[in-house]
Length: 140
Image (cartoon, rainbow, N blue to C red):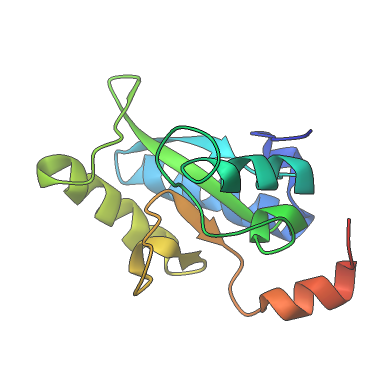
């Protein structure tokens, strides 16, 4: 089971975009930590089971093959404040998430803008569909 945090596990295009977000946030006075990049199908199914079959809150609606992470074109982040992760999305913490989302939305699809099941940590490649990824890569 592979659940990576390495930027190098993303496609070359996504590596550039991920590093751009890190640099753009730093230039705006914010630090972010990459918490997830590539996930294999086994890791995706384990995450999907959380809150359904196993304990914990539901954190994804994507089964294996249904996540951009499975195709190396998505990553998750968390803002850092004084070196500590900021998980809250309300109040002042929420403003931080929205600033980061605004920066990343210039060149990535930010799941914090989705109509349903908003995922504030999630950014993915813009301009490609899940169906196109599946056709290109098949089952991994």
